[in-house]
View 1 (cartoon, rainbow, N blue to C red):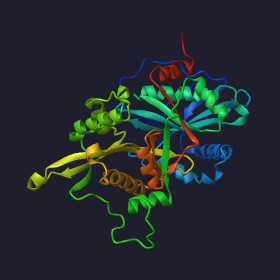
View 2 (spheres, helix red, strand yellow):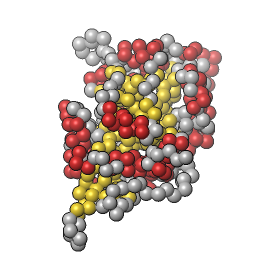
View 3 (cartoon, rainbow, N blue to C red):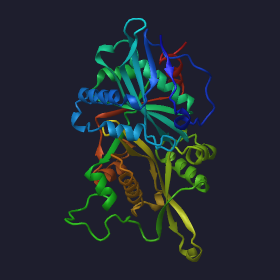
Length: 396
């Protein structure tokens, strides 16, 4: 017996952004195993699995999550207003004699939505996947991945991603057998704890300040520049910046976003990401308050199961070449760090191409930590479709 039960609040969580694909077969599961969306009463099981995973990865010191943390981020009240930062799926095995059956949890996955500016669509990020050691080798990990790939397609996602510690060779071989691509050219950077606080308060390291100065917390902005939240009227500007960034990163062939995509996913019924614009006041039109866009940052909320708290992921930051060297990039990062601290995020992260040495030097000057032990994997296009329909097995 196998089944996948819908989440009781799936309408709130899953608002699709594209036409739903044709019905797919359920994931292949061992006899007597089912998958279902977790509910609040599953919190003890979810917490136990997270702690087991932390022990396996040797990261017990980082795992400070409590049941209350999980309740507030996975099952907030009132549920109808959220925000819900992540969702969980349980794998359960039927046990006991006929007529006295019960279901025991044997694995889980925690996931949330991220966003791709080049696609103009949300993605699905797998934060954690764990199967109890006694149940490995039965296909439960693949079944959980196949189910999440189906969720991704049903919700109009353009990709599915996750990361794995670089030393976990068995997991990496497994993921690569499913056609997942290792995004080894990307390096993840992170601000957390003191470095995140310093970024929010001072715009980077406090440079030896023993006591906070009078401008602590103030944005370090060039004269005549302001930051503001983007509105739907800014979609043409946002798309222009996205295309310019794609050109700079030599990835224009991957940039298929349109104004329609941005309208729907940034300013539609569900906003999957948010944009902050940098603008410069035109010297010749000060009385009219004429402001010219000179940069942008796009971000969304990630999730850390080990912290039980949301994070802030900077998907893209861009300043045109003519405006660089004036502190606009740092001001955008500082504003996002302030948002992260205001919303009690546990960390702020982003990634950068490994050849982009100017950006890498800049980020490291801010004391951001390069997470070189993490390798991101991605399914997109045909590989995501194969995972959803066939469990990662390419069809001839």
